[in-house]
Image 1 (spheres, rainbow, N blue to C red):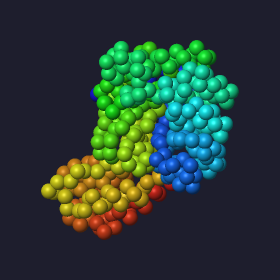
Image 2: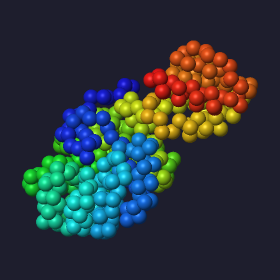
Image 3: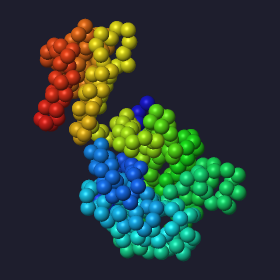
Image 4: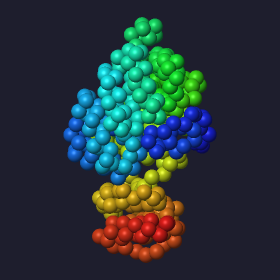
Amino acid sequence: MSVNNEYKKTRQIHIGPVLIGGGAPVPVQSMTNTDTRQVPATIRQIKRLEQAGCEIVRLAVLDQTAAQAIQLIKKKIKIPIIADIHFDYRLAIAALRAGADGLRINPGNIGGPKAVEKVLKEAKTRDTAIRIGVNSGSLQKEILKQYGRPTPEAMVASALDYIQLFENLGFSQIKISLKSSNVLETVSAYQLLSRKVDYPLHLGITEAGTLLAGTVKSALGIGLLLHQGIGDTIRVSLSCDPVEEIKVAFEILRALNIRKHGPEIISCPTCGRTEINLFKLVQKVEKALAGIQASPKVAIMGCVVNGPGEAREADIGIAGGRGQGLLFKKGKLVKKVPESELAEVLITEVRAMVKNGF
């Protein structure tokens, strides 16, 4: 089945220098899990996220100290900051004044329409975009009463109410998210909203879970929507190191042929024919190549059945067996390499290929 690369044309906004919507590449976001008030720790984590390829980072702003910390953090990082605000509109204003490049708010818990108006006025003055974040767990009471529970239709109704409020106040630098831990209901909600508005959509499955479960849910939910041409920016939510979120997000984009980031490693699951320590080899190569921005296709195969064919089809690859491996580059057999040298030879060859523009 082919991927639908004909994306719905949405309005374009910006978070700092990063464009979202309007045909721009789909940016990958994450959120720190450090205490924003702990500035050195937060900077260290953001730098790790930057190295992994994160393009926008969100920070929790719990109080005025956290809001002021944004000014210090911005001086040490390269990517734009979104301030995540709940319950107190004054924190949103303080975060904007401290240099936040964007806001994520739930207009229903920020302090009422007057408070929202004050936030929008400050954001408009600074040409700062705001994400309207609708979560299934925090819908307006009247909408829950109308729909009985947080259905996709209820989430869309909530978003439309907030969009109307923003538009009435003359604010249109908006992106929207509709998140639930239920994959299919999240997909349905985004599908419904995409038919009704042309604002850019931020995709994600909230409370997706641990690395394994969260990856599966996110790949299905985000992947289904992107395949339909819906979605302008993504965040994979995982209960683990946020660097893993970036890795998973880029693999989703790669699998759909939307964006490529870093080497693509093709490796076999192994079977009884495998005669080299493939798992150890793959882990060593993957770790060594982390941080490379270019996207060569690297095959690491463990037997003679599919190995040579896969290795030939890759930009560079090895097919191993009986204590040695065959090194292929651009479809041609280059040399035999002892198993003990396979990792280092492959790593060296990939780095040389990237340096030369592969």
